[in-house]
Length: 209
Image (tube, rainbow, N blue to C red; front, side, top):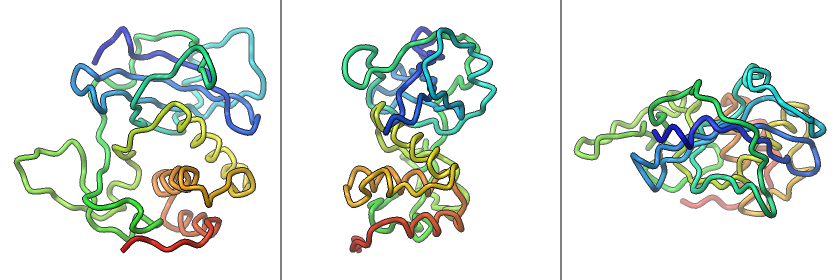
């Protein structure tokens, strides 16, 4: 891990003017330049920008999302920029986190429990992959690379679901990017029963065999 780039906490704008969320990033690019960047989002949501923030108050809200793999760290200037708040040396991880991976196409099914080629990552490439039932890895994030805008979208979607609202009333789920983000979210942070219910909000499409 690169300590000088880790433990940084940012404020980001949620979609649809629904307020602001908070994220903490970690840099493991010393181990992997490709997928060594990670971000967490906290449960805290503020309606307005505050003059100052307290790290312990943000962290005490608990983790809402993550660790999500980033392909780049957030910009602090320009469109979609995040506001850098402060940095802590009280890291919540010190090693690259475990995640789940799939030995097939993610879009074969919107219900990821229907697919049986899931395995844990990191994986010894010299060994045969040990496939596990999806419920064993449901809670883990994927190796899918995301941008900072993705975490803002996922957090917004999760907030909508948490308040009993339909995501389809805010996002066009017929658009592939929105659909993929929604499918990733519900298959990772909710139970199988909840996932099946949330899938009813998706427009019908033909799954890839």
